[in-house]
Image 1 (cartoon, rainbow, N blue to C red):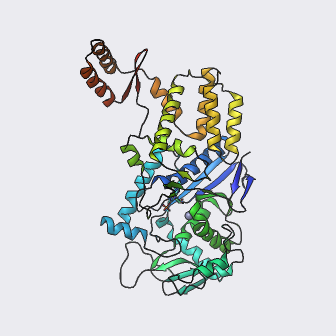
Image 2 (image 1 turned 90 degrees about the horizontal axis):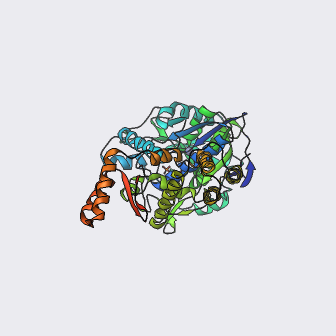
Image 3 (image 1 turned 30 degrees about the horizontal axis):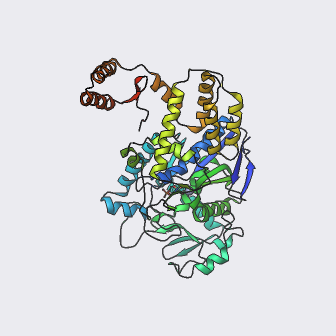
Length: 462
Ligand code: AMP
Ligand code: ZN
């Protein structure tokens, strides 16, 4: 049994799948116009932990994630610049090249974070027909109107519009007087289909019953989630900023079209913050996994850093905190490496650990239970078995780390180690340091302890 806080209704609810043991999850994926930053990646780490937690409960997951490869605007409410066009200008490449390059970069990032690849990554550009069908359906039902730049959804026609975010529609009307598009009937209305500008040819544009153009942002998720998971489906995830606009609008158009809910559970992860503000492109404070690697941080140390916070709490990124996450992860690997393999775990610790996970994915609590177990006096082999079980949810590659750290050292390294010991005995520090550098260059760590020097494989695997 797993309890999750449903954004729709703001209540913790016991999760029940719609279809036996099968669970359909849809995650709003990246807009592939630039590298993902570590803030973005938190949203996918959260979805990964959710998936893993459901798997250990015995559910069979079908996970769909979209790849937004057609430009949507930098502002959520149909304002700002087209993100793909921004990238095209920046890199002097076609929209297709940009999308393909950053999709690969994204897949690389999630692999480095040990995020299980979704069952299907669906590209928006492969589903234009499905989107057009959905807009036609909305048109038939009278939810749309035309302006000079596109087809819009009339939010006033849906009595419960804004229920996900508990939007203050009247307040929005008040605040929206300065809005850019005077043709919109209501400030919350949004584009379903945008017309290509009459004077310029876009790299990405399609014919439609309303003229050549491209889809609005929200319609892609409505079309693709339902295509692969049916309506309603079980769980929709995304970052917290999706609540007031993107998910509100997905929900509105899908429910208007089909007359039934889009998803049962809506789950949202909070922001990664830097110096009290959100990490984001416009804030100019982005950090990527490559930047972490340049400073010798392991991608999995970032995973550990994220697990230390609850997904619904803001998490402040600092280099000190990252340092501490890396040290803690190294410490975990070292403690694990000292354990002998075992099959039977420490049942009580496992029970408390999974109770925390099943209580709305309380990973900070779960980690503290894990450390309590490591520091307890139970047998090593039990610790090993429980850590393996816990790692099914944590995803810190513990099995791989154990194997790597326990592999015998290669002959060449042993020779260097002996040579270094001999030099140290003769107080030849400069030469012995050179050997240390060479050992480290080959992917090993040298630690001089009071029992002599210990050489292990480097833990990080960036
Ligand atoms: P985008 O590629 O801009 O659509 O964003 C991808 C995901 O990252 C979305 O789910 C956003 O909600 C999420 N996101 C953006 N900025 C942050 C941040 N600073 N911390 C956590 N998640 C974020
Ligand atoms: Zn979406």
